[in-house]
Image 1 (cartoon, rainbow, N blue to C red):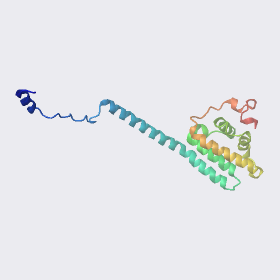
Image 2: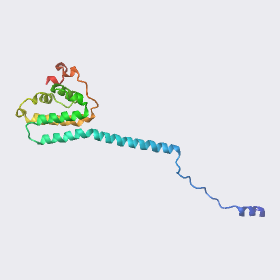
Image 3: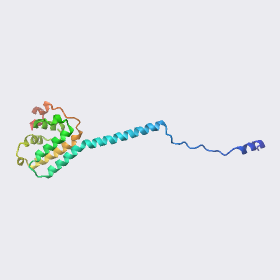
Image 4: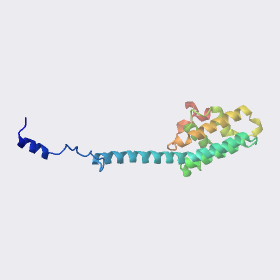
Length: 180
């Protein structure tokens, strides 16, 4: 079989030792980059959610006030709703532009920022109704107006900027709020 010299050499050999497992630490630079990107994305998403929540708080408060107006049976519901919407718009649009608007420009602004929300009847009610006796407004118009006002307030934070008050929006020939 084996000669004595080979046997002696085989006795000197040790058992096979497996190498230690590869450690995860320290991580390679690629993993640190991936972790940094993931953490950055998470922080940005959290910051965006916080900013969005803060931006919507004024509209939330206005909707709470509007809900109280809906539950009350005051005759000045139209004026209260008008003031709530004005206050909310002052939080989202430049105060220097919104605060100086007369009623006609205000109605035009409402039409331009929510033309799919407001009915012509509600815009006319807002434009002329604040000068009328509230008892002459029937309850169906009141409910419709309050519903449309709540829809407008809910979408108010999503409006990015105050639209320019274009003359075409007040032109009756083009279907603006004036042909109500």
